[in-house]
Image 1 (cartoon, rainbow, N blue to C red):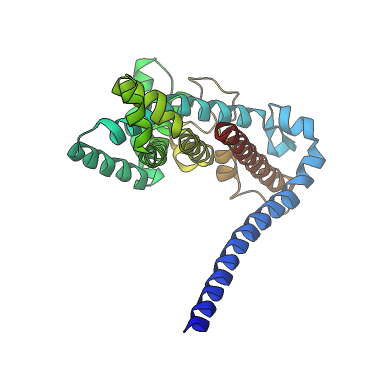
Image 2: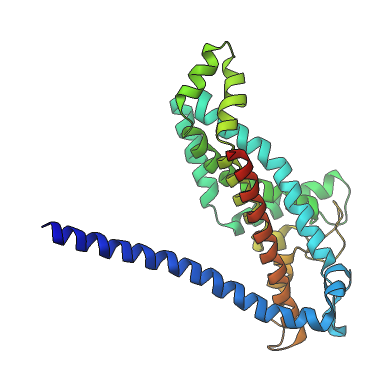
Length: 288
């Protein structure tokens, strides 16, 4: 019986090891493919021209992605500025303050928001947000960076709320009881003790929301105008993801145009790696 149990445990360990190795292998394959496919175009165009030129004209073999980079950065940053305070404070309310029936209903709504397909967000943005912005600011078209920011901020909310809520629920109650016993008010305790203790989980929620905002394409095409302009709040713009999505279908296989689009994917991938590294550095400091 003991020998059989050990055999089962050994088989389970090997299975878990295989799963972990497969994940690492998939990440390495994706990394290798993006590097191999993206480097040739960057080498032909020139790294400085590719990253810092504002001209994207495939017909003339001019591939400068500075407008796409700045638009993605400003669009994601704007969405996070709106979503982080709302998401974190909502999670804090659901975890520590809300009555159980209210918290249950609100959690269901958060889960519903997370499950809505991105194309639905795009449709709502096209029908409600784009015409509203056009009317309010007297624009020729309401499809602009601001519309993309507003839609993205709603899209990342459920991720920030869900992960932050899990982190806040995991905070030991002894921390809060000790703070209350020392004379702190409940609100002070929740903000200065509970939120600080859950800071690594909150950072994780922000990183997850950032990845969702950076990687979104379908919704952005529908509400941002999809024009290769330098970013302006009321200007139609194109993100890195939408540049790839909108042009990959007609870029000839093996052409410089197609390779340049793959190079955009490499830059986007490096953005995610940089953010993940920064996240680990920040959470490491918090742990110490």
